[in-house]
Image (tube, rainbow, N blue to C red; front, side):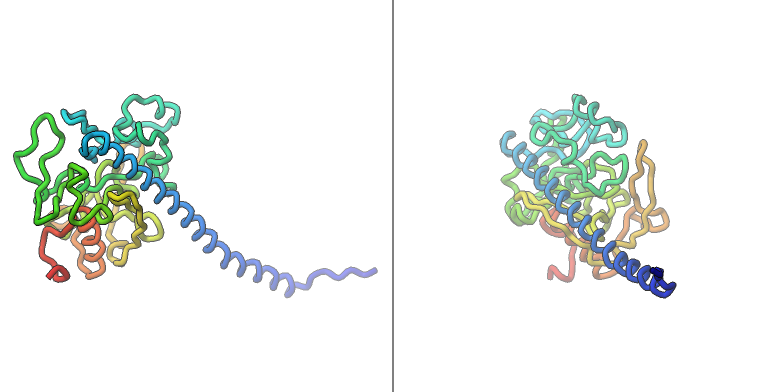
Length: 297
C-alpha cells in the first residue's frame, strides 16, 4: 500500500494555523495571569489594611506609623514595618526572616511574609507596599501644625482644613472625606518601601516616589474602610515619566531620571490626563488638594 506524506503547502498551512493560535492564546494567558496576580495583590492590601485597623483599635485609635525605620515612641506607635522588611534588600532567607526579632508593628496581626509582597514584585524586593503620607507616613509641607511634636512621639499634629484632617494620626479623624475615600497602602512597584511621599501644596511627583506602574499600566491601593482598588493610569504622560534605576543594597529602586527633574527635584505633569492621575492620588492621600485647581472651582 502506497503511503502519501504531507505536501509542503499542507505543512505550511499547519504551521501557519499553529502560529495564529499561539498569537491568540499567548495574550489571553498573559492577561489571565495578570488578573490572578492582581487579585492576590488586592487581597494582600485588604489583609494589611485589616491589620492596620486592628492595630489602631487596640491602641486607643492611634494609627501605626507609616515609615519603615525608627524607634518606639511614648504612645506605642511603632513603625508598621522594620527589620528585614524595612531593609528588604538585606535578608533573603525565609527562615531567618521568621526568626528576626524586629519585623514591625503589624507583624503580630499578619505574620506571613507573602502578604507584604505583590506577586509582580521585582527579584530581591521582599516587601513592595507602603503607607501613603496622609495615613501617618512622612508629613508633607502644609499638612501638619509645626512645633506640636515632641521627643516622645513620632509625628506632629495634623492640620485641619474645614472638616478635613490632612495628616491623619487617629482613626476618628477620618471623617471628611470618609474612610472609603482615604488611601492607606499603595503597591509601590520598585520604589523603596516604607511610606509613599505625596505632595500636598504642589502638583508634583517626588523624585523617589513616582506613580507606581505595576499591573498593566496602573497600581493597586487600599482605603481606610478596608477595601482595595485597582487604578489604571489615564495619562500617557504618567506612564512615560523618565525613570532610572538606583542601587539600594542588593536591589534597584526606580527614581526620576536626572534630565526630567525640575527646580523642585520632582516631576510636574504637563498634560490634563497626567495632572488628573496625580490629583486623584493627592485627593485620596490628603482628602483634598492644597492648591487651586480649575475643577475645584
